[in-house]
Picture 1 (tube, rainbow, N blue to C red):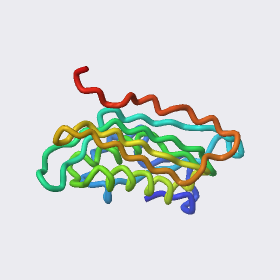
Picture 2 (picture 1 turned 90 degrees about the horizontal axis):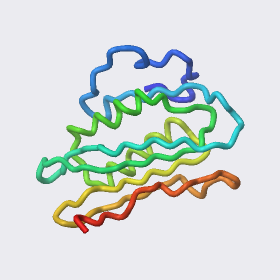
Picture 3 (picture 1 turned 180 degrees about the vertical axis):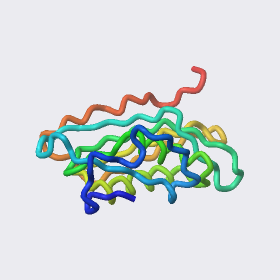
Picture 4 (picture 1 turned 120 degrees about the vertical axis):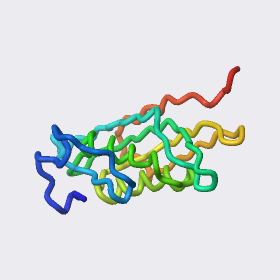
Length: 157
């Protein structure tokens, strides 16, 4: 896995190449490249409205709308590697809390952003939607942090 300490380059492993979906999140490699606006305080948002993983009890698919916001430090995550990482959860068994927080923690530990938060808006399981939120701490002063824009679950009404 490429981390900031590996001296990120402008030659990510997946960009512009055929890249099979990793078999598991542990196998997935996240690529990081130098922040092109190092020193500037700005927010990056990734939205995965069709995220899936598997229930660890029933093996049935679970669906979520993920929103990942971060203020870059020295690096940014390369989006294709993030897409492959998130896709690797399709065959991964995990509770909503473990999956959501685990994604946020891995990105935070490897990328070392100034700030990161993740919102996991899970569709109902057993009639109950589950929303999971995690962040590294308070947002840096002066960072514009818009609402994640995901409406509360309303079912059919």
